[in-house]
Each structure stands twice: as structure tokens, then as C-alpha cells.
Image 1: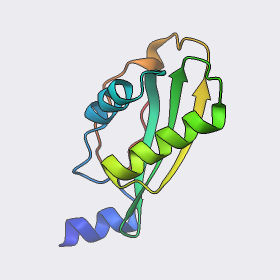
Image 2 (image 1 turned 90 degrees about the vertical axis):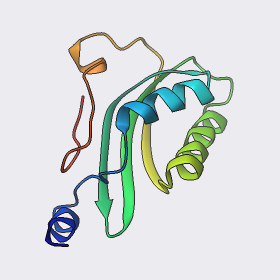
Image 3 (image 1 turned 180 degrees about the vertical axis):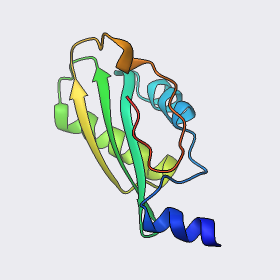
Image 4 (image 1 turned 135 degrees about the vertical axis):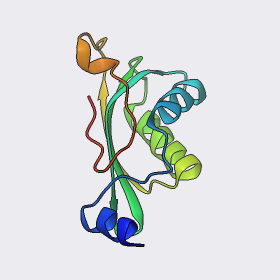
Length: 109
């Protein structure tokens, strides 16, 4: 109980969320998504909040792709609020492929 309370007060990450699995699942379900990185997840009250960068194939309809990603996060992971930065260039560098596992306030690159 104390651990849960401290995690909530510190806006910690949901312990049940597997960031690596979410990244793979998102890329499999939405073919335009090539890479997911810079994932940040924390709890606000009882609700998870997320920010992420998605390297995507340039879509014909940017808003429709954004809506598909948001719907995916809502239906598959119950994340109702996600800020998504779509990138059209390949992500190069060490920040793109680091192991991302939740612990406390998740801040991965």
C-alpha cells in the first residue's frame, strides 16, 4: 500500500506496462510506424499518461494516422492521453534503441 501511494504521489510509471512490448505491438499493428522511442509514461491519479516519438512512413493523412495511434493506445493499453511526436526521418543515434523498462517515473530515450 505504501509503495503504491508513493508511486502515485511521485507520478510514477504503471508497473504493469511493458514498454518494449508496447513498442513492438504498435509497430506490428500500424505498419506505417517504423520505430517508437523516447517513451515516457507516468500516472496522474489512476490514469496513465504517455509521450512518445514515432518514426513513421510519411502518411497521406497525418491526422488519420495520429488518430489510429491514439485509438490503439486507448484500446490496447487504456492510455487516454498521449502526446505523440511523429518523425519522418530515420532516428539515428544511441537514443533510438535503448532498453526501455518502466521503473518509477519512466523517462527513456
